[in-house]
Length: 474
Image 1: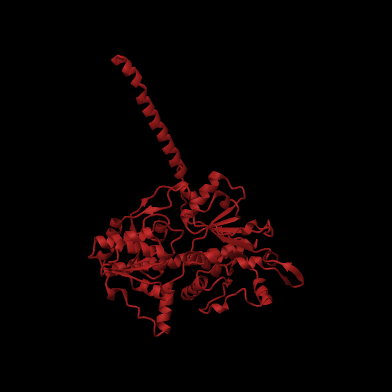
Image 2: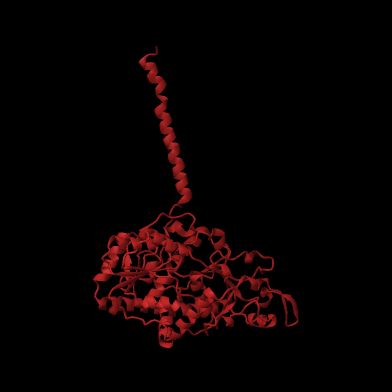
């Protein structure tokens, strides 16, 4: 029979084995965390105005803008983008009749004659991204750069023109730069006919998981819609190098104004529903659902506090509708109203009638729905995180406290801090109660301040587009 000492000697290695196993497991977990979540790098934030150098001293940038005309024009362009099919959309299009768009079925020589009027820059807009977000992104450039949105089939054309045979788009417009949205290039720059010296421009949503280091290194110019994007990209090029000598420009951005279309329809179409003044309705909230997470936070707030004022929910995507239905479990409270898909003027009517628009976004490439709510003069309630708090501050809306999510390694620029925010139902409720407690005059003042910020940003964007046209002429 072994002695107690012998037994003790035989069992002694087990604690060491267990400890070693725990250490190995901890190392594996650490490596996996480092793989999934990047080590954060310091980020230098810019301060003050960021100017685009004007290359052409003859360029004049006027502060005057026909805002009403601009809004109607932008809305027509956006509707054409979403509903006009796989067509060429020229900046001059300003109609509700999509037959004025340039289609592949047009007489070839007439189409080529139109395409031959080459601008400083064309926008590549394939059919698979002609949705609300990308149409809002691209149509602002189409209008203010006085250019065209080109589908993929334009680059497949071969034709004879002015005595030259077997020409392509690249022969027709050799000096025109080409703008791409995010990763949606469809392999166009890799085609054999794509000129090596063709100037390329990228308009990124920096929260995209599809934009890689290689993507940022293959463009001559990168345009930033938000200051947060400009700061992160500027830091990234400083840290990682800039082999192509890419130029980074902060150009701001703008969105169409559905409320302008609602007012236009109310004035010209007797069948259009009457737009009820906000204060006659009392306090009423609207959530335009683009994200399931944000929609859940809003719905959970109303379920937790059924005495809250009326809430209208307009889901933009089926997954948002599914998330709302899951939360409501088929029994919506009497003060929660779901809306079916609607056109731009009817969405504008909802924006005009809402006392406040709730957009507690998890992330935004820019924030078009926030911007459209500002344009309508509603009180905007959104997340106190970049870039949402670039559009709305405490003097022009209500900011909901958010918690930064884990930095996601699939989002390249999250190495400088998370690009996503978590907002709880409790935080939404606290902000809703704050809005309810405001006087009508206070709500009107916040809405007017938001509208003014919208107008100022639109003017700044328009001026920057004129400067970019001048830069591209060099």
